[in-house]
Length: 275
Image 1 (tube, rainbow, N blue to C red):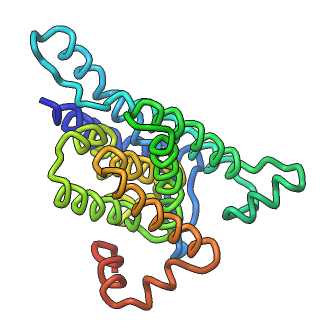
Image 2: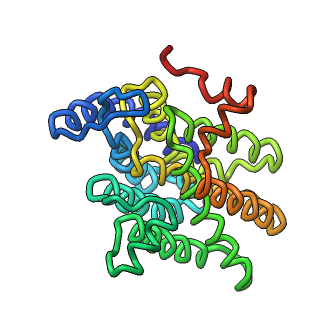
């Protein structure tokens, strides 16, 4: 029963995606992708509404069916984190200025200008701290969990420079976490939003739309939450270090250029895209 919310969210996302694509185009919310194709953006706006539509039958079943037990553990943490991250990403999508990267946002702050990217970073930190406070552990583990969520959110935003890349990375991460921890509750906890992510990711991969920061930040926040729910303290420390390295590398060089230089990664990165 714990995977029923994810299944219903998947159905809702499949139904809503074509409608939202049309609405984005009608509203003029289109932008060129890396190949210059004009695509609707941000299709990440699909994720939260699809999940909320699915929440209607989920809540009714939970309350009206005896012994339904439909909500997975830590479901509330995902409900707290993801809508907020999506909103921050949407603000960055529609109101962003010229500032890019940690250095760009820092320079904007030093000059007295609060960029939408800086606002997103502060808001994501606040949400991560709130979510981490709902997890068991001491003060150090609290800060560690928040750090993983914040850095993962930014890493998947850095990855979202080619169609389908961030969602592919999320899927690979999920496979790795599932194989190494054999835990199913974290999958169920993030699945309510991860199911619509897969639908949006398909459109992104096929170059029919772009996730935008709205979508890539949600993917990253889900990845971070999944890691803190599935990994022990040592695993989270390793994750934090890896995420920090990727953030630093992405700040000073092109992740796309690195991927292009590694044959296996280049092939995996291109799988599923239109030729």
